[in-house]
Image 1: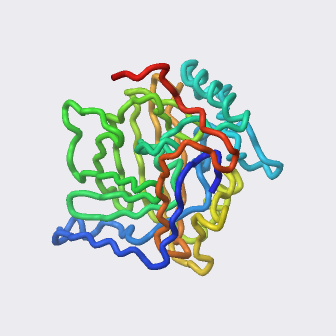
Image 2: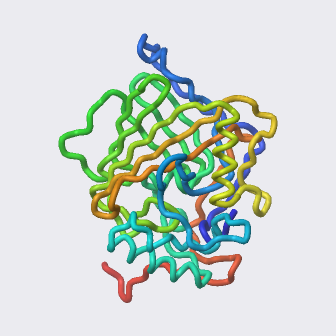
Length: 304
């Protein structure tokens, strides 16, 4: 995998992982819901730029091919999408990354991945659909999200790592609305470190797309954001023989304290070539590939 982004132990499972979920009898309304079962994967990180509109923040550091250089994560702090506070954070983190040092983020600190960061920095997901909820499993670090169906947000939401997620089906689309995402020193919406505030509101729309569309979006995302699968013999590879539909996630991000307007990005998944690839975070800040330690925050004296 790209070493500047993660410190983790990779375990590829030789046998398929069987996940058993007890489903309640389907109601008439639920029986019309789309079927998102099975594993879904991609070979890149970040968000694909939407067909229309600007999309999210891009990396200032590109490879000769024009793809994002994932070894130097310098978010475009001059983008007019950013308010001054967010631009300052990106500039500071970019200055760290351009020196070849991995700045702290949830993935290399073994912390939960808040949405939408969890979609930006993940390669494989599985959705377990039930009558009253959808459970979203993600490959990196055993992350699990729970989405209540056809239920409102509570009047007072207690902030949490993943926030309060509610969902409903609109025809062939699962719509997930998330608020109350906990603000921490490592709050970010993407792998460049773009920060968010307590005003963050995320809407995710999952729907199936035909095979040709899935391939086109996935190929474009890989061209924009680079390919991370297969490094060091691990990672995710797509099934070259897959002719079925893909799963597309459209994410709309709104945070009036950090962004001048809402923005949208997409993540497109296809079927993987192998069973679930388990990625376990190693709580070790030493960059074995560079022979040094990650520049994590330290305290001059203990707080206890």
